[in-house]
Length: 170
Image (tube, rainbow, N blue to C red; front, side):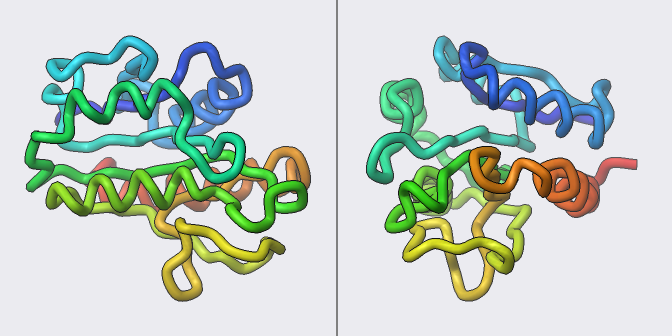
């Protein structure tokens, strides 16, 4: 069985905490951490299944490390690859672009024929708009530890249950 590449910034303490929970739910042996701050094209090519941590910065932007990394992989075909995306956002202080980073990344992946998996319900969140929303779902897992920290563990657990099926984990 191939490992899942989990791409995230090793410098983000909040994201590291979430990744630890995700790896525990999916099985540590099934996952490999990749530092998005220094990842290369070769790092990217090693996997068929991915989990991407994409917090939303400022007014609906990708973090700098993703802005710098995406040009290195933009000419790649993602056909046959599966991507699950999660990201932190703040629905109260940034309600007009809640988890937009997740939506931006999903668009990038789909433009290159990758399959985005792990859609989650948008119920239970209060915000104005989000590029990550399609119908009544988000194109990934929305985490708001600023306003809904008590819901995070259950959301991660449920998301990982779905990902086990998508990634054919036992």
